[in-house]
Image 1 (cartoon, rainbow, N blue to C red):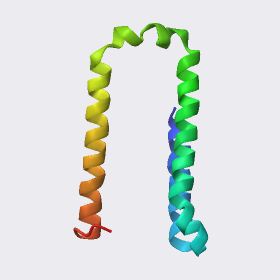
Image 2 (image 1 turned 90 degrees about the horizontal axis):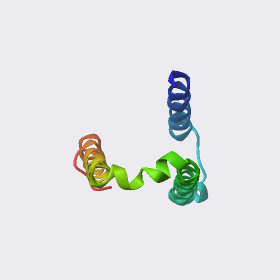
Image 3 (image 1 turned 120 degrees about the vertical axis):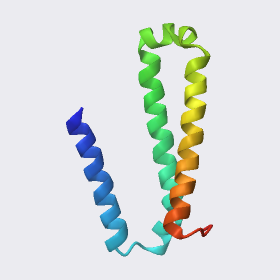
Length: 96
C-alpha cells in the first residue's frame, strides 16, 4: 500500500511540475476541465465495476445502512468546504 501511495504522490508532483514549467497550448488549457472530468468519470466507473463484482459488498449494501450515506455526505461536504477555504487562503480571497 505504501508503494502505491508513493506512486500517486510522484504522479501528482510530476503533473504539478509539468503544469508549472511547461508551456501548454491554449487549446489544451481550455480542455483540461473536460479531460479531468472524463478521467474522473472513467475512474468512478471502474470503481463501480469492481464494487459490483464483489458479491460480499453487494450483499452488505443494506447492512451498511444510513451510516455510510451520512459519512459520504459529510466527507463530500467537508472536502468541498476545505477546498474552498484553502483556495481562498491561497488566492487571497479572489473568486478566480
